[in-house]
Image (cartoon, rainbow, N blue to C red; front, side, top):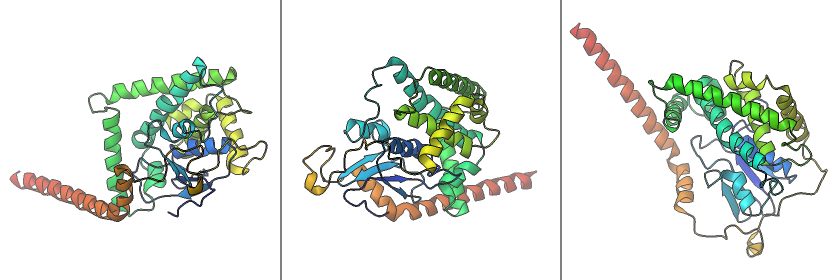
Length: 312
């Protein structure tokens, strides 16, 4: 990936697919939030690290905000004074409650649906289609396991978890529908809540299969679909709007390191950042080890089956 030029903001995200500028359900709300801020930025695609939780991230000059930092990219941009579209609404209890539901409950439901409820195709196209089939398959199986661990899903409680998920989906989407009628979403003054809603709705409609549970629940509320589609036309297909001045602060260059916003001066890289860079060298090696381990386990399982057949 090329480094950002001084004076430019760059969003590093996963590749486009399904007619979306980035098909990643985590990257898309960040992309839309930056569009709502009306600031030109470069979109750079990174497909080299399908399992990295640092993507998406925003960088410019000496500044960088990673997804795995506390609160995610959008929260970091707000805290660091880069751009904050929520300042007028963050004290409203209804807005705060709806924001929590969108960024946690609905986001978790989409994660569950993508990895456990909709087959392999959508996840494969977003994360693994550029990798050899065997490597992609191994990484997919690993990610499915990680998602089950994250949501504490086992064979014993899978049915109960599915019922809980359905209840959360119906409740969250119904609440969003009610809030939209109460003008909690602001088409003329969008916030990160709007970015979350538009991102989640567009991802659900475009990337998840027709038999998706979330998709079916969403289609029962046409006003949410129309709201998201309108923003898709305004921000995702029509290019940069020039209706108002940018809400962004300019990226800090080396000469501006003492001026706001200053999040971090040019500094010694953290261990986390060094680890991220080392993946460039070791990623392929780790993939090959995973493939060999996977094939070894398959071989051991097949041998055990054959031994049992011989004993019979």
